[in-house]
Length: 152
Image (cartoon, one colour):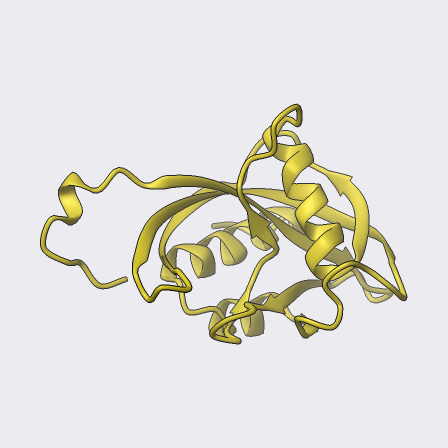
């Protein structure tokens, strides 16, 4: 993330995100990433908090809308990361994304944003390399080490 003059005064906008993962037949884990609509870079499903929903519930809803997955969402966040969200008018806003784990139980054939995004399963190390945000890459690496029972 590049810093800009005045960054220290910018209060980040809060978002929630889900880190969808599954355990494969051999016991290894894979992570589902989606492309962002504007820049087409690899990201996790995320969005603004939703009125009447707890943050982890909103994260699970984003995973359904953006990636077409349903599963068990953890109530405790894995961590958070910062990124600059580009707006349609070319301005950007600093966002802090609180990331919740989502163990995928079902991948749907149809979902709301399927024609607007691509999605792909990655190994944790491939997913960490594919995302642009260093903070998100760190969360992916740390979360899947914990799931696999590996030391940090």
